[in-house]
Image (tube, rainbow, N blue to C red; front, side, top):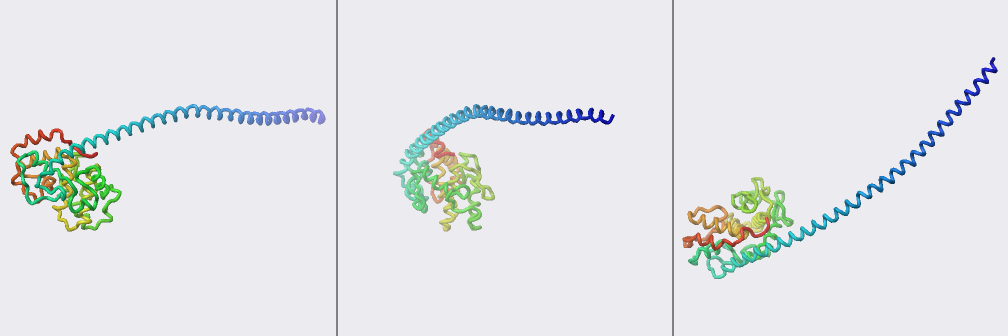
Length: 303
């Protein structure tokens, strides 16, 4: 009985061994098959990605080429517009040469204004200076006759954005910074015709506008405060505001003509007229001036 039992048990043990051995082999085969199958999927995936990526890259290159061409076209148009503006300003400025009312080589206000009898000529003589500004013109290498280049030079002195800033809040003395903020928070001592800002800086001295016109206004103001501290506030404002009619000829001449009727001037016009006796100014026919300025540009230089 025991022998028979052992004989019956033997096959059972053999089958168990066979079953376990086959399972291991089957698992190993399945594992190897899995690796082979996975590698095929990876290769197919890489090929699929390559097929999708290369057309996308080609499309991106085409878009970049079109964008570059557009930028070149826009830059060319801007340059042509600036030359047209400069030509108009040159025509206006040439009318100043015979006028004794303002020393065109100094940019300084004259003690008295000698009317030409022509309201158009008188308005231009007062508002549009020519030549090299007194005090700082030669120092900075700028001229009223080259407004775009001069604006860029002064803009780089801007305490906010300039590459060669005269000072900023940290490097200015308290007296310099307080004076800077005081002058440039006066309404109209800014570029409102361009960006609508009411002042050049905020009460904390931060920039109120980011256009190049007001960069130049802030830059020149800081330069004069630092390098010519003997200049009075009125003299600094007068020097800085002489550029505003060059940047905005039509608006500034129109503003002057309108305000001259009452004799009540905004700070920007008052600064330009600082020290000038306008009692003999001929403004009887302001309407003809507006007609004569119909083709004068509203803005010179980019906003």
